[in-house]
Image (tube, rainbow, N blue to C red; front, top):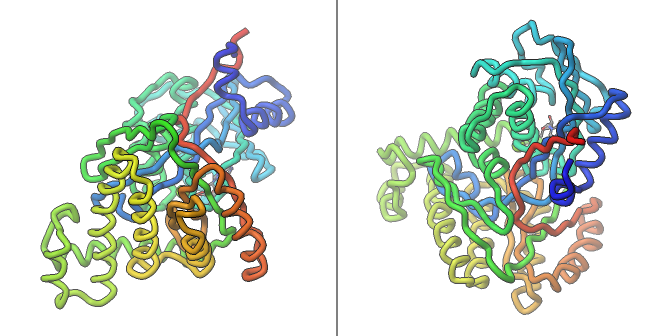
Length: 397
Ligand code: ADP
Ligand code: MG
């Protein structure tokens, strides 16, 4: 590894992946592919509804240390799982309905694209919490894909790579996700948010320039069981509502048009639709607020987004509502601009926009009281928009 790369890539998961690799495989890795988690600032549950989303890559990463082998086997170890899973390259990859699907699905995509497979040993270490709405799944997919670009000699553009990984999650793993997670993990840039137009799959970097507030992530450490069915149900309800309104895309639906169709829609369908239409608008307003450096306006948009997800889209939970209410009661005079639930919902994390010197105030007002109320310790960490996935050759003398 050259010194420039070393300074860019030092980080807990990066070092752990190498150390674990040595222990598990008694060898030195050739590559470390390391991908960020992500936080979505605004634009929630509209990536699959032709909307806009505005995520940032975070500085917590998942790292895969790997080396090629002469065998026709893939051997994978994850510190989260503590066991080596083995796959035969001569057999077609098939989902095992476990964590390895996020990886072998990517192998399969590369084989379908006529890559040149070779045996591999892989070791995964991660600082992206699993299932907390910070997209450990996309980090795992995109880190694997970026590794294969070197290891199996088939490189894709960052956008194609993101689409291939999204196809893995939707079709191979069986989680019908939108394109946001894989796009930001692949295309994230330091000090930038990424505005993704999910209708056209085009994207635009939005610089955060200068003294942008800190992103404070608060992990509620709750996960409500509803997740998978709840997500699929909402996707279905949105499709049904759009059909009743008689449009092909949510981008053509205004709040006025929605009101005109209100009597044709059930209460639930109307509420889902109102979230989608208003969130598409809020996300565009948020970009304008960032460009104008209007943090008060940006913070208000985050709170409104939370309310919409809470009441209209019904994907929040008491623990996260409690956290957001608490932040709001501290207010802008305490340096807290706004916050909302982030990710798929039903638990997971909140994101708040806070001045750097307000982080401890926010933590102090939430930590002990949250534990007292719910009997759970929340986790806090601060982050800044960081870079997308990279694969580093660590075997260069
Ligand atoms: P999120 O993407 O919000 O973290 P998901 O449910 O989409 O939540 O993805 C989490 C799943 O991804 C885990 O249950 C596991 O199967 C897989 N995964 C993520 N990170 C790792 C890891 N470090 N080791 C093994 N599996 C992982
Ligand atoms: Mg995920």
